[in-house]
Length: 621
Ligand code: DON
Image 1 (cartoon, rainbow, N blue to C red):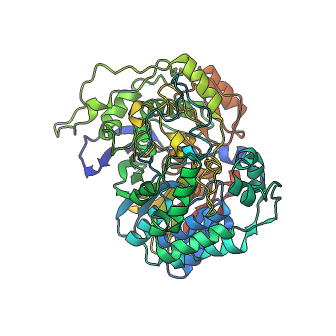
Image 2 (cartoon, rainbow, N blue to C red; image 1 turned 180 degrees about the horizontal axis):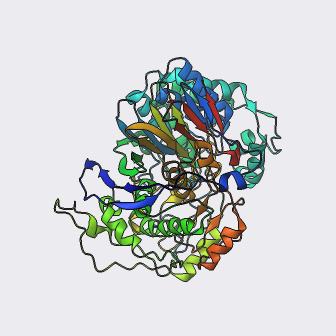
Image 3 (cartoon, rainbow, N blue to C red; image 1 turned 45 degrees about the vertical axis):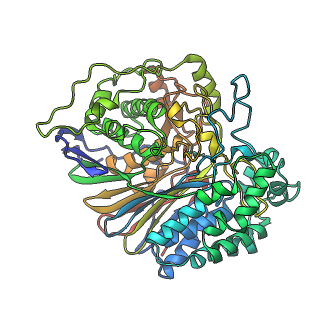
C-alpha cells in the first residue's frame, strides 16, 4: 500500500475563456492502492495495458484498430488514423460504427491546440415538437425509435471530412481505403455481432435492405461467416472520390432522400444539403491532485457529458476517494452523479437553440453548494434532490473572492409515476462506440459516435448503410423518459435543424501540461458514469491504465432512484450501500465500454487499455 501522505488540492476552472477563481485548498489523502480490480475482475481480463513507443489505437474491433495503425505507420497523424478507424468501424461494427449517424471527435494536438468536432445529427426542417405524439398527446409507440421517422440528418461523413481537412495530413481516399477493402472483401462475423444481429433480427427484418444485407435474407450470420457489403463499399468509394458532398448532395443524398420520402420519413434532399458539422471549443477544467497539475479537456453541449464530468469532478474534488471497495467513496460519487443528472434533465440542450448555464454548472462555487447537500452517511433521494440554481453562479467570481450567497434553489422535483416508467426503460440495450488514438508526435483523438440504439432505426439505406434513430434523444414528450430512462426538459424538445442532447463524452486529460489519458465510452447515460469513473481511476486513484478500465463501475442517473452495479461488484459493498439507504437495482449489468489510452509519465510510452467487457482491442507500433 502506498504511503498515506497528504497533499493539497487546488482547483481552477477555464470555460471558453480563462477565468481566475479563488484558490480552494482542501486536504485529500492519496488513494489506497486499488484492490477491487484485481479481486473482482474476470480472471481472463488483462491486468496490464499494452505498451508501445509510438502509436496506439484502441477500439471495439481488431480490424478497425489495425486500420488506424496502418495509417499511422504510413505517416498519418492521429486525426488521419481516427478517420480511418471511424470509416472501418462503419463496416465491421455495423451496430454502432456508422456513416448514417453522428458523434463527437475531440482532438488535442501536440502543439496544445484542442478542438471539438460536433457532427451530431440534426432534426430535419420538417420536424416538429409534437411529431411523435398522437392526437391525444400520447407518445406513438416506436415512432422515434424504429423506422424512417426516427432518423436524424446524419453528420458522420461531414464530421470526419471536416476533421481530416482541418487537422489531418492525408486525403480522404487514403484514409478510407481500409474501410472500402473491408466492405468489399468482407470480414468474419464475430460471436458478438452474430448475437446482436439475432437480438435485433425482428426490427432489422422489417426493412427490406436490412433483411437482405444483415440477415442474409432471413437466416442468421453465424460466427465466422463472412459479411460482405458491396453496396456500402460502392458508397464509400463514391465518398472517397467525390468528398463529403457525395453524401449530402450527390447520388447518395438523392437515393437517401428519395427512399426516406417514399417511406414516410421527414428528411429531404435540402436537409442533407444543409447539414453542417461544427468546430466547437472544448470545456476545460484544471485540478491539482497529489502535487500534479491536471487539465481535463472534455465535450461541450450539445453533449451533456462534459458539463456533467466537470460538475462531478468539482463536487468530488476535496472529497477523499479511496477505492470502489470503500462504500463511503462510492456513496460520494453516487450522490455527485444524482445531482449532475438532475441538472442535466433541467438545463442541457443544443447550445445553438437554448441558453445553457454552463459557467454556473461548472463553477467551483456551485459545486461547493451542491456538496453541502450531501450527507456522507445517508443516501439522499431523487424525490428530494432536484436541479440546482446554477444561474446564480454564472458571473465570474470577483477577484476579492468569495462565492455568491445563494439562498433559494428552484424546485423541479421528481414525479413518482414518471420515475417508475423510467426504471422500466433504463436497462434498455443500445450501442455506440468509442475509440482513442495517440500518434508518435503526441497528437490525440477521442471519438465517440453512434446510431443511438443497436443498428439505429433498423433501416439500411439502399446504398448499404444503417441509419440512426437519434431523434429519440430529443424530449419527444415532456415528462416521459426516452429509451434510456432519461428525463429531459423542453429546451431539448424536437425542433427543425436542432441537435438532440447527447451523453457522449470523449475526454482527454493532461498531467503537468502533457498528454496523459484519452477516454470515452458508449452506454447512453451510463457513458457519463463510465467515463467519469475512468477519469477518477486514472487521475485521483492513480490506477494503472488497464486497472482504470477493469475497475467495477456503478451508475446513478437521478431518475430512476436506483443504483446500477456491475456484475463483478462485491456483494458486501452492495449491502453496505443498501444500509446507507441506496436502492440497488437487483439486475447487475455491464456499464460502458471504455477504450482508453494512457501515457506513461516516466517513459512516454502509450498505454493501450481496451475494455475487456466486450473484447476491445489495442493495436500499436
Ligand atoms: O448521444 C447519446 O447520448 C446516445 N444517443 C448514445 C446512445 C448510446 O450510447 C447507446 N449505447 N450503448
